[in-house]
Length: 322
Ligand code: AMP
Ligand code: MG
Image (cartoon, rainbow, N blue to C red; front, top):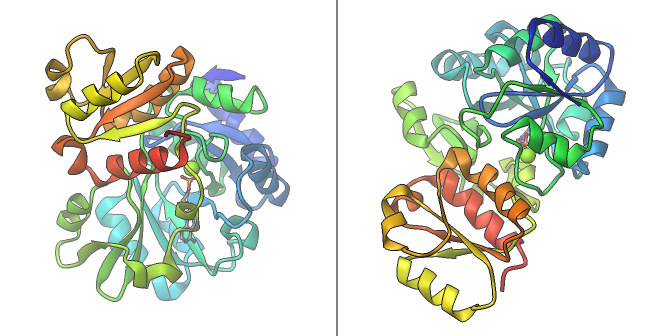
């Protein structure tokens, strides 16, 4: 059931969470399927509702730096303070060694926990009123595009939980997940915050993408099938390649996603503007329109956006495109 975010629904969501229920909540990245971190039955239900693989840990959401520190091992408090004070609240998830307050159920047995302070007044108020940190993965069925509107959650979970509706998400893409290794910030999952933004906020620390040698630290979730609509996704490098794809499949209904700059180069083709914040919404629109194929123009606007490119590549590799 979708309920608009009001003081009453926020209070009700917080009460339900405190008493061990699962509630879908808005954040600035994507909608989350939340439960209290001290409610083992609710944590199990989150995995069950999503069909989430049991080895994929949940991000824990906090309302303050102090609350985050209670969840981190003392040895990592400096890291939480340093990154948190520079970039929280915001779409940055920091992986640190966990304290005794965080259970195996949340971390899928890992000795680390992923922490984030969302930059959304409704999320913050729900966490504050619940009085407990909230574990929350994206509120989609596992493998599907993340939900950026309350209706997306309702479509995937079919009324199983209350959805607090605060409108479309500002970023529309998941948080960036990082871990500090030595003096470097390593990006375990590309997301709403770019490496350049993180680097400029942190000053002296360098930021890099995870490499093969970081395998042991990798976000377990990046191994799983992800972000794919029920429509094949094909990536093209140029308007000419899109033309050739359309010609090769004359009987198919296609939808082209491309940056605003490129729309003029594709006259006569059903086209929607592509941006990181609208990608998942466009995937779900294309499903509703029952097109046969989504064709995406990966020009420089896309190739220079690591998170957008990552989601597109994952969607293309896991879809049944020929
Ligand atoms: P989701 O909230 O569904 O967008 O996924 C959260 C992401 O954070 C997944 O890719 C998880 O694997 C990752 N994650 C959560 N906890 C940890 C952790 N302790 N170490 C590394 N990655 C984590
Ligand atoms: Mg997810």
